[in-house]
Structures are given as structure tokens and as C-alpha cells.
Length: 490
Ligand code: BGP
Image 1: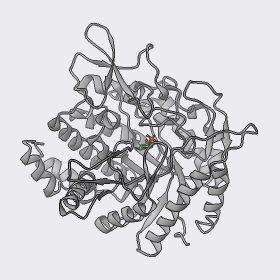
Image 2: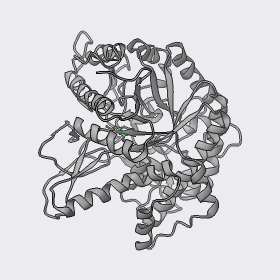
Image 3: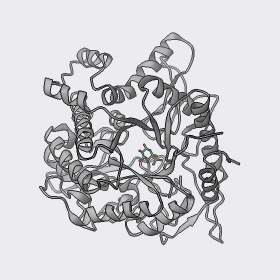
Image 4: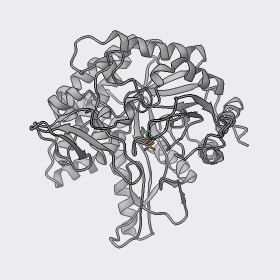
């Protein structure tokens, strides 16, 4: 076992799933604030007021927004992200715990609505900027490098209600103003940036990723174009502000295996792969790939890509590639193939060789080695795994300890796969930030009891708990992993 010197061991969170304090510090309402709680069997809904003043809970996977819908948070409904894990009020305590584990990096996101509450202001909100100053200053104290996601599954609700979010190109200008504000403010404090979290997942759940309630393929193609342009502009803005800035993209990556060696299954697996690669191809190579343009043409979709826009994409390619990895799934061209597996957003067929988590996600460490090789072979850029982990039901013991051997087993097997990819296959992997390093709200279900963390947060689904933080067994294990630079995984 040997990981490169300076390898960025760490952990990951996202503002809307962790901070809470949804109306403090001048923060505006975001699309994430408007998704209700759910469960493995019950969707989270998004909420809006209709033209007669009725509050409607809508299925975010099928809703087509109309101008008379006013999306928002309403007293009648429960939204788990409003309090989340109250990270907003625990900055020093939480980062001290990360420091104690020896984190070299902390992937987190800035909430756009803390900086520009409606997205449309000319000047940023000083209180919001100060909040992240505190986070970065605490990180510096412990030698932790922040890896900052600019847009992790949230957008100001005012932009949603005014322009239908990323459907409208004017959102790009607002985003750039935000990127400039945070880039300038945190110059010297932040070196690693990610543009859009799991940008490819807009294909499955455009509300969660982009604040867009639509299933119209033409609109969604425009959303993709606008986010890709915004991502390329963000790269340019951050490079201009500081030549030391390194900016990466972020994709949700759950490789699709062919269910059988039937060439039709293999072809489908390749096509599914392109649903993911399309986004990273544009972000890494700087132009739309031919397979996507052909697909648009065949389906009558016109994205009106201008010469100016092409130039923006060309000039805004990323410095590294980051991705989340939890699972793999299978695809089959046979309509009678059996049993769908579950996933955060990515569905497919069950793999008979794999076991699943309590939420039905198929556990596949070898798939991580394959994923790393696919991405490195395709792009030849440094890679970061910025999410990985097992959502599980932890029990806090009466003495406030927590035995979570399943988290350790999951992470150990994935770190072994990383080791093989680096040392046997030659992949350039520079960071590993397991997801939900401290417990937080699940994005797919809105649950608290789906826990990933090294640190237990005492909040429960029914709202009870005092938010106290406790170290799980995995905390001590990961601390040893980091101290030995990945050599001691016992
Ligand atoms: C990814 C998201 C994260 C995170 C993770 C785990 O798709 O980027 O925000 O939540 O999935 O998913 P879940 O929270 O549904 O368990």
C-alpha cells in the first residue's frame, strides 16, 4: 500500500444537507429549501403555491412548471434541510473533529443564497461571506485544504420563480457574479474549486440538481448548455483571479455494466456511459461530442450553440476531474430482464454478484477501480473521488459510542481498490473525500437515519435529538488510515 505524498485524505459535505440555519445570516431561500422529507419508499416532494393560493406538494420527477406556480417553503410542510445538522452553529467544533482525524482536505459547498440571497443583487451579503471566512480560517488552523463546490444542488428560489432557473441564460450572469464574489473574497484561502455537483444527474432529477421542474427534453438540453457554459466561465473567472486556483468538474458516476455479453447489452452499456461522459467530455475537452449532437439532431432538439459559446467552452476546460462513486448497476436491452436495483438517482438492473446496502445500492469496490481507469484513460487528468461511502442505520450506545464496522468494511475495500488503481494501473488519483464525513440529511430520501459519517450527529427523523456530535468507531479507524497514508487499513 502506498498513496502519493500529499494525498488529500478528507471528507465531504454540502451546505444544504448540513448547515441548516436556512434563514439566518441574511440567507435567501433556495431550491433545496423547498423539498419535503421522504423515505426509501416515499418520494420527497417539492412545494409550490398555485394561482388560487393552494399549497401543492408535487412529484419532482414528473412536474412541468408553469409561470403561475410559485415555488417556496410553506408552514404546512416539513423540510429537513431547514435545520439539517445545524453545521452553521458548530463550525469550530466540527472542523476541530476533522482536524483530530488528520484531514488534509475538506470538500464542502458554498450556499449561493448566503452570498446572494435572491441571486439578483449587485453586491454580496457580507454576513454570508464572513460565515465561510470562518470555515476556511478554521480549516487553515488544522492544515486542511478546502475543496469548494460552487453549486451543490441548490439555486436561489427567486431565480427559479423569475426565470425558471437554468432554463434561462440570464441565470449564467447571476452565477458568474457569485463566482467572482467568492473567488475574490477567498483568494489565497481556497485553491481547489468544483463547479456543479453531479452535473450529469440533471438527466434524472432536474429539480434537485438545477431547480428546474421539467421533463421537456428541449428545455433540459438548454439547462445542460447553460450550466456547461456557466461552468466554463467559472473556470476562466477563477483562473483570472488567481493563477494558483485549480478548478475541476464533478460528475455522479455509477458505471453501467452490460447485464450479459449479448452485444445489444454491451452497446446499451456504452450508450449509458455516454449519458455521463457527455458532461465531462464538454468540461474536459471543451466541445460538444459528436454522439450528443447526433442524438439531439435525431430527437429534434436544437441548442442554438453560437460561435461565442463554443469559444467559452474551449477556453474553460477544467484542471482535474472529480466524481462521486457509490455503486454500479447493470443495463439490459431485454425488456423482460428482471429486478430493478435502487440508487440515489441512477437506476438499473441488479447484479447477481453484488450485495446491496439497506437502501438497495449495490456495493462494488472493484467497480471503483474500473471507474478510475475509465476516467483516467479517457481524460488523462488528475482525479478526485469527492464522494463515496455507505448509507447505514447506526445505533448510538448508551455510553455514546457507536460501533459501525460496516462503514469501515465498505471504506476499506474501496481504499484497496484505489490503491490498485494507483499502484497497479497508474491512475493519477489525488484526493479522497468520503461522503457525509459527519452525518447529514440524505438527498434522495431526506432522512437523517441514513448515515455515512465518522461522526454521529444526534438528530433523528422525527425532529428529536440535541445535535450533539459523537465519534464512531470509524472515526478512530480513518484517523489511523490517514496517519499512515493509507498503509494501515486494519
Ligand atoms: C450524491 C449527492 C450528495 C449525497 C450523496 C448520497 O448524489 O451529491 O449530495 O447526498 O449522493 O446520497 P443520499 O444522500 O441520497 O444517500
